[in-house]
Amino acid sequence: MNLLYLMTEPFGIGGVQSDLLILSEDLCARGHTVWVATTQGVLLPELQARGARFIDIDFHFRDPRKLAVAAARLRRLVREHKIDLVAPQSVRSSMVAYAALRLVPTGYRVASTGKRVPIVTTIHNIHNPRNFQRAALILRRCADFVIFESHYERNRLLAHGLADSRSAVIHSGIDIERLARPSQAAELASRYGLLPGRHLVYGIVARLSEEKGHHYLVDAFADVVQQQPDARLVVIGDGPLLPQVREQVDSLGLSREVIFTGMQRDIASHLALLDVFVLASTRESFPLSAREAMSASRPVIAPRIGGCPEVVEEGVTGLLFEAANVGDLRDKMLHMAQPQVRAVMGAAGHERARRLFSRQSWVDGDEGVYLRWASGAAH
Image 1 (cartoon, helix red, strand yellow):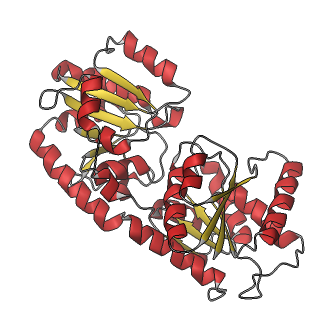
Image 2 (cartoon, helix red, strand yellow):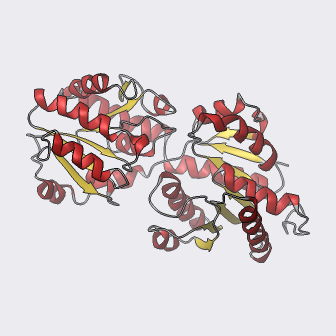
Image 3 (cartoon, one colour):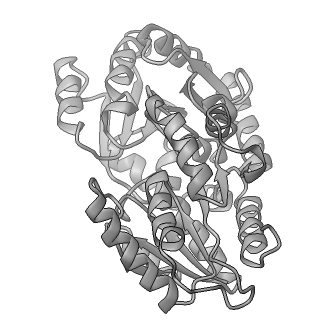
C-alpha cells in the first residue's frame, strides 16, 4: 500500500509528529510505502531515517488561494506516486484532500480497486470549542472515515453531527519497551544535582506554551517545597513561555529547586529521574506525555479535563485535579510524597499502559482501517 500522511504543522517536536515517527517506522517495516506531506522541522531527518518519504507541502493556509495551491500540488503527487490512501492528520488537511481528490475531477483511480483514493482522517485534538460543530460538518463531507485517539474527541464530534458509522477510536500507542530501558539516568541525575533517595523529584514533559499551565505548576510547587524542602521540579521542554517561567521561578526564590533541561529526545532517561509526573494543562485531549510516564511506571497527576480521565485512572494510576486550581494541584502533589503511594500507582500505571496503549495494538488498528479502505472493502 502507498500511504500518504498529511500534516498541518512542520515536522518538529509534538504529539502528532511523535505518532508519525512510530507509524512510519512500523508500517514501512510491514512492507508499505509511507509518504509524509508537511513542511520541514527539526525531526525531519529522524522521520526519513525511519523509512518515510518527505513531500514539502504547506497546509497551514489562511486564504482560499493557498488552499487551491496546496490542493493542486497534492493532486499531482497522488497521481505521480500512485497513492492508494490519503491520511490527513487534521481538519484543515482533510479540506485540502477533499478539494484535491473530490471537487476537481482527476481521472485517477487506485489501480487495485478502480475506485477513488479514500481519505481516512485522524483527529488528535480540537482545542477550540467553537470549532466542534464546524469540524463535524467538514469531516462528514471531506473524510470517508475518521480515526480518533480518544473517546473524548469522538463523542464531542458525534454530538455535533459526525456519522457514528464512519468513525472509530484507536488509542495511539507507546513504545513501552524503549521507555523501560533508560540508558543515561545516572549520568543525568549527576548533571542536574539530583540525589536518589534524598530528593523527591516532580517533573513535567511539555512544550512551554500557555495551555500547558507551567505557571500553575510552579506556584503549586512553591507551596510543596515549604513542606518538602528536598523536593525538586524538573521542567523538560522548550517553548515561547520559557523566559517567563524562568522569571517566575527566580522571583519565587526557587532557582535551586527547579531544573530546566530544555528540549530532550531521550525521554526514557529523563522520566527515570522522576518520582512523580505532573501535567498542569488547561487544555488537553489525550496526553502522550502522561501515557509515556505511566509506561515508565511513574504515577501521574493530571487535570480533570479532556481525555485525561481516559488516561489516568483516578486513585489507581494517579490523581486528577481541578485545572488551574493551584491549591488542589498542591494537595495532590503532597499526597504523592508518600513512597508507598507512588510505588503502587506507578506499577498500576505501567500495567494500564501495557494493556490499553501498546504500540502493536495501535499500529495493528490503524493498518487494519487503512487496508480495508485501500482494498475497497469498506466503501
